[in-house]
Structures are given as C-alpha cells and as structure tokens.
Length: 435
Image (cartoon, helix red, strand yellow):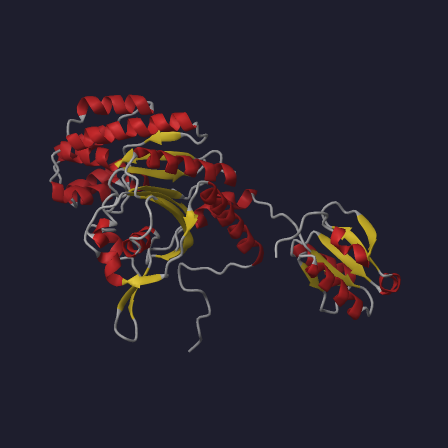
C-alpha cells in the first residue's frame, strides 16, 4: 500500500519566504499588543476534554469540531479550538494574579471543520484579552487596539462590525422567542451574510420552528439602517426589554469613547451578526475585509463575563479580540514585498578556506550569511542568491583572496564595490539582518 505523504486535510507546510511573511504579520501584531500593555501567555495545545465541554461555554456546535483523543492512560483530551477557553482555565488556576490581567497569545488552534478557501483545520490566531474589567472602557480599548493592528499591518480599507449580544437577545425576546431557543436562533442569524435572508428565514421557520410572525419581527429589526446613531435611536423606540435597552446604552457609550480615541478604521453598527460562540455576553465585533477580498471575516472578539466563572464558581469579566493569521496573510500576500537582507558568498575559484573565513566573519557581525557549497558557475550562484532574497553577494576568487578583499554586489541597486576583509561589517551599514 502506497504511503500518503501529503499533509492531513486542512493543514499546510510553510517554508522560507512564506514563513517569514507570516512571522512578520505575527511580530507586527505582537508589537502593538505589547505597546498597549499586554503580556504574552502560552498554554498547552491540548487540554482536558471537559474544559471544552463545560455547560455555558463554547456551545454544542463547536464541541463537534474538537479534535478529541484518549492518551495511553485513557485520559480524555482535546486540541484547543480557540485561545479564549485556555485563558479562562489559566485564570482559574492563577488566582494570585492582580487584576486586570492583560494577556496576549499567538498560537495554533485546531477545528475539525470542512476545509474551504480561507478555512483550515489547523490555523493560527493572535488574541489579546483584558480580564477583570467590567467597564466599557475595556470594550473601547479592544476596538482601538484592533485599529492599531490594522494600521500597522497596512490594512487601511477594512471595517469593524460592532454589535451587542444584549441587543441581539433583546430583539429575539421581543419577537416572542423562548429563552431556551435563543442560542439556536443566534446560530441561524449568524449565517445571514453567508447564506442570505431567504435561507435564514427558511431555517428559522423549518428547523428552529419559529412562527412566521416571530421571524418577520426579527428580520425587521435586522433591516434597520442609517448611521450608528440613527440605528440606535430607532432601536430605542421599538426595543422595550431591559436587556435590549442595556445593550443600546452600552453601544452608545462605546461609540462615544471611540470618538474620543479617534480611530481610523470605520466602525459600523450591524445588528445582523451575533457570533456563534455561546460564551459572549455583551459587546461583539468582527473584522470585514477590504473590497475584493472574498475571504469572510478575518478577526473578531467580544465580551464574556461568565466564561471564567464556569471554572472558578465566581464570575470575572473578560473581553478580547482575535486576528486570524491565515486570513490576514490572504489579504496582504499580493501586496507584500519581502525586505531583502543577508549575504550570499559566491566562489569563483578554489578559495574555500578564505570563503569560510569571510562567511564566518559576517556571522560574527550578526549578518545572515550563506556559503556556496555546490559546483555551480557564478551565474547560477547569483540566481540562487536572488531566489533566496539575499540583498548582497560577496564574490570571492583568487584575486580577492590574494589581496585580502571581497567584491560586493547589491542585488537591489546593482552597484558593485570592493572592501577589505577587515571592513566586512560595513556591508549592511548599521543595519543587521535578523538572526
């Protein structure tokens, strides 16, 4: 039987420039997270399975997507499907930490989902969360941090969808939906931009067993349009539940704080999305890609004021955001140009010992350097250096060896010059290639 050497479905290998590109995305986000006072956390890639299945947590649908297994001691374990539940578990074990805790986590997660464009079974997220602050200032700051990351990445034509689970719950309850049906209705509502209004209406009636009157009431609310202030004003006149009114007040407060911060990314109040995870309780947000990028949302987050309490018995407020690294890469790939750096040492004659001395001296100066080890002519060595995105080629032959020099060619500008061995550190000026 022939071995299947392909990666498992929904997973990929990354190498060279693609990996460097993804690392740049993560480092750009990491820098913004640190700038906003967040500390980094890392957690195990697998957890005790019951951590993921606690009632009131992620919800039944996500549980079907968990990679589940038993170890040799018959313990039930699961690969993490997001980075928020592990944070909640971590907070339950670290009651010594002073609040608020501002943590960020960049890592891989796994979901047994149907692979499609921009959707994988193994993917990376970059999360930042504020734990222990119930004030809406934390909600606003998460939106501001999202904007800061977008600007740093150069994604200037995206938008941030904003809503409140309180408003969504108020709408559904106003329509007459029973409390125990709310999450099921949310899951259907959350598909509106994916399958369209007619299909959502059909699903709510035929699968969720709502009456046509209940569905029409919900859709009437979702159809409200205008500026953010106009939508909230219309809602305030027709949404009578206490929960809904709380959500309206929350959104007004958050939007007023964002006006003070003065962020650049447009923020659009959108009543039609609710986010599928069960643990959200208040503000929710989602990132819409630029026009022409058909990949769906590439990030989001929200407030979860009861999740940590599922593990501690005492509620602790939390709110966070998350970027999908894979979809951010899909947005930026066409416009990304890798910055060339480093040196390839090309040899012309039998000068191996001198070439070794050159490449080692470059490395001592923290300059990324590679030495030719194959019997290639100079032209092919240059092609190789260019394919590896090196910025410089050091050309070494018998003349360079006898004179104690190296000939340097800049692959970007095309300029060429000769420098003494002792001045190799000047090849990149004051800039040093990353190790």
